[in-house]
Length: 611
Image 1 (cartoon, rainbow, N blue to C red):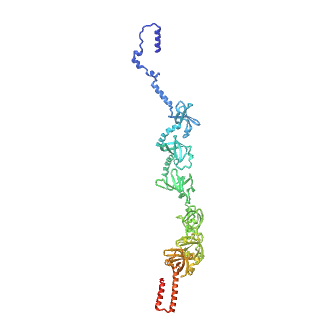
Image 2: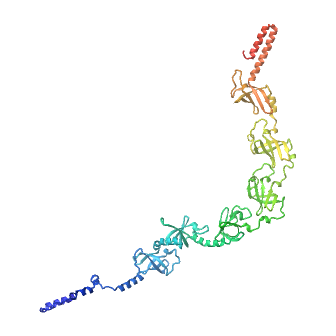
């Protein structure tokens, strides 16, 4: 229009001016119609407006065939090619993306055509390549999946990455979850490394949202299958039923057997008819064996099994010709204080009581005679096949020492023995194996006052003894030790006769007097009133003096002495001599009656101690 207006202007200038009618535009001619049909879109955008139907169709085609490649967006992609190291992923962008196969370790079965979630990491790198990440996409979606799996009980796949303290680390949806060692399997795990780098099925059992911790379990899946088997097996259990099982665990008290989802216990006493120290002597882990059901509780949750019950009881196989009095050989299997158990055949044991190990009446512990593992010979004393009991004896293999006791140990004969035991009233001395005698405390020493035998001798000491009494029927022998030596009191009876004088020192002062030790055997007692000296004072401890024997009792070994009697006797002797001299002088002088009275009075006063 502008061009047309210009041409018109040229023409006007080039030709003579001719007066024409003014030109009227369409807008001027019909302004309402012009405004109604005016294209405002073209006026504003400078382009023709596209039909709305065509635009909707175009947007639909774009949505179906292309994705908006925004950063940090998770989209679905398709594996279109797999190399040795990478997977080529098509996400309907202008180029394909590449993801390392390391990000698919949890899914070793990845194949062309699989749908995978990817994160658009970078739209284009330096080479124009679309950079994708499957691992980051899994992490973004992982928590939603984990929570959903936990709520629904869904079984998930996980890749066991490595061992850790107490269990394993498992990759689940890109999250590192913890698999406790106790949740790997229903049976104890002995080699954890066998699960590393393996893909397994798990159940999400616990989620800690605060610390972002996930705990998974493989055992829960096994238990679910086992529970079904368990119900079926328990419903068919009967006492006496024989089942095949596998040794699951061995303890000191028994063996746990897996019966196919149900565990039973074989107690150590039900493993073998013979005594064993530990179940591993009979069975080993993972061993298959047949067991018999002995008992179970009402819920059949505790099942008691037996292994030895599948074989005949050894007592039933014991030969009929075995009888009381026969000699048998066996091995010591158990020792107690009261005796030892001897296995004379597999599963057949007899007890040797300690009293049947020696003829000695002085009983000792069974350990003094035998040890576990010893091979011994014994005589059958009692045999009860119904009660399955047998008692044995060792001492019966040797003659009874009391048989000829009177010839070996006649009355008055001297012997040497060993101190075996003490009592409050005496000492037991063993003359030989099976022959013990008692020395009463009063027969230990002639001179010593003994309160307890341990003051005189010790266990194991050798003592010379004399046979005092012999009771063959009662198997009692009375011995004496002091009788092997001469009684020194026979000699002391003369040496320390009444009125004999001896020198000594006060050894000890007591309440009622003091003691003086004249020799190793004689300790005399000095009464308090006999401790007075001539000057009126009393003897003190350690002070030496002369003493006169005023009492000697050989039977009770009692000696009493006096120091006072020494000078009293001298004084009495002097008085007697003076009286005799005075009487002689009086006879010569023929004194008067008054003189005689004066002399007698003077004598009396002297005796009374006044002069």
